[in-house]
Length: 107
Image 1 (cartoon, rainbow, N blue to C red):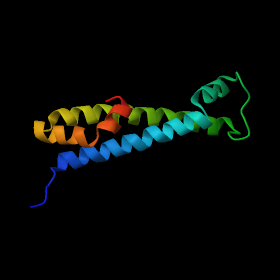
Image 2 (image 1 turned 45 degrees about the vertical axis):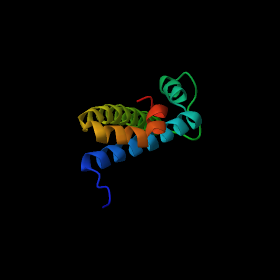
Image 3 (image 1 turned 60 degrees about the vertical axis):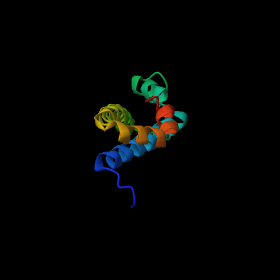
Image 4 (image 1 turned 120 degrees about the vertical axis):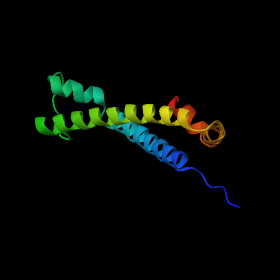
């Protein structure tokens, strides 16, 4: 008989995958555009580059970055809460299956 995982396990797995992808995207964004550069451009400390040519676009980038950080924080909290709610055997199975990703994310 095949193993049937509870929906809570699958939902938790989906949230973990979303967090992994979001973390990777944020890391790439920070390495290329860089939040520090955006903040300095917004304050006028450095000129706005050709990539982000208008103040409106700069504001949009800053807002998108802030929303991504909020989503990241939400997912981290949600994963920890859902993980605690799983029965012990299922929680052990999840942690065992995703130990590397959980460690990489600091969860």
